[in-house]
Length: 148
View 1: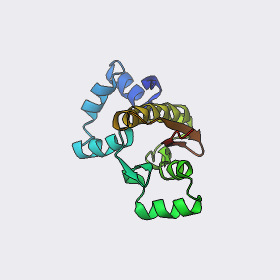
View 2 (view 1 turned 90 degrees about the horizontal axis):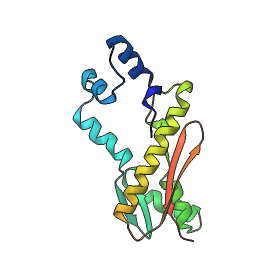
View 3 (view 1 turned 120 degrees about the horizontal axis):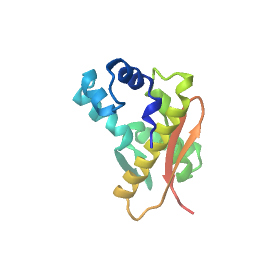
């Protein structure tokens, strides 16, 4: 679970307004989120998926040409292709993250990974998947079918 006590802007808002740290109230009063943006951000948490030549892929992260390129480069190893085409650098979406927020970013990455597991199980109930969170300059998420 994400520790909202580590969200600096929420903490400052709560102190300024003598309010408890309630993230939903904070978002309501900030009036900066628009519906379309929230819908698009939701696709990070509950991704759109597609099947292509035996692989299950993130729709928004690759196309058929990418698949063919990586399929050839990785000698037809579908697990490696899925890991490559399904990897997402969380930092690509978080432009204002500061080094002090690294722990919070990993909390978020683990939450996204949990949601991906549910999404994959929902869409493909008879298939086993491996969802991973790794560390580079920011958290990296990926998934692949468990073919063992």
